[in-house]
Length: 228
Image (cartoon, rainbow, N blue to C red; front, side, top):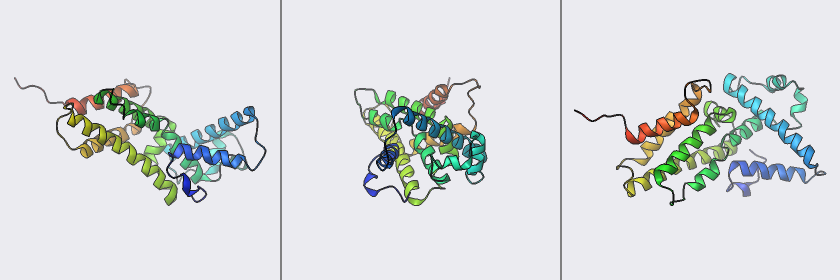
C-alpha cells in the first residue's frame, strides 16, 4: 500500500500493521486502555465480518455497504476504523497468518526431531487456514491488493514454502526422509492444505488437527502396502 513507509519492509506484515497503528496515534491524544480495547474489538469484528463476506461472496461482489449492514452500523462509521475495502482485505490477510511467524522461528530448533517440527508446522498452518481470516486468505488471496501490499503477502507465503523445503532437506540429510525433491513435497503439501477451506466443516467427523495429521501421515508414509 502506498502509505506504508519503505523502512518497515523487513518486518512481518502483522508487525508492520501494529507499527502503523502506533504511529497513527501519535498525531492525536492517546486514548486510554479501555477506549483502545473497545476500538480494537470493534476493528476485529469489522475485519472478521469482512473476511466472512469476502470468502462467501467474493471480494469484488462485497461492498462496504454490505459489511456495514452485516454489522448493523452506518457505512460512515466504518471509516473511523478502516480506510477502504482494500485496506480491510490487507488486514484480513495479515491476521490470517496468526502466529505462524513464531512457528516458523521454532522450526529452527534442532533439539526437536525434524518430523515432529514438520507436524507442528502442518497443524499450525491448517488451523490458521481454516478460521475466518484463513479462509479469506485461501479463497480470495492477495490479487486485489496493490503491488506493494500484495508483494508483502506473497513474500510471507514464500517463507512458509521455504520452511517446508528446509525441513524436508534436513530430514533427508539425517535419514528421517528418503531422498526426494523438497520443492515437490512442499507443493504437494500446500496444494492439499489449500483445498481444505473449501470443504472442511467443524461439524464434520474430523477435527482440523485430524485432517492435518492424516495428510502428513499419508505424505510421509505413503499408501502402498506390503505385497503378500
